[in-house]
Image (cartoon, rainbow, N blue to C red; front, top):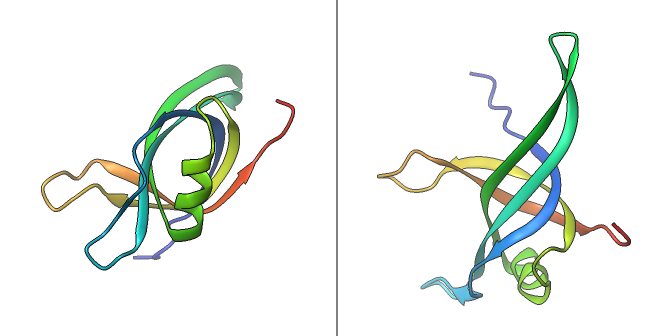
Length: 102
């Protein structure tokens, strides 16, 4: 097992939960990112359209909470199962950069 698990994606803030605190007092927020682009696959261009659930903690959580819906951003992080019961992947955002003028 390589252990590599890195994601970098750009998109619009499509959904935003409330900023809350974990029992340990850590700021956390859940959000949804909508991505659209064109990519080359199998020698042809195709349109890519996807939404991904994401979560951010502390500084990144406060950045997201202050942002409005439809803001364009770049998110870097890693994938992890949503919970022990749900193996659905969720993007854990470790770096967020807002993209101005898009």
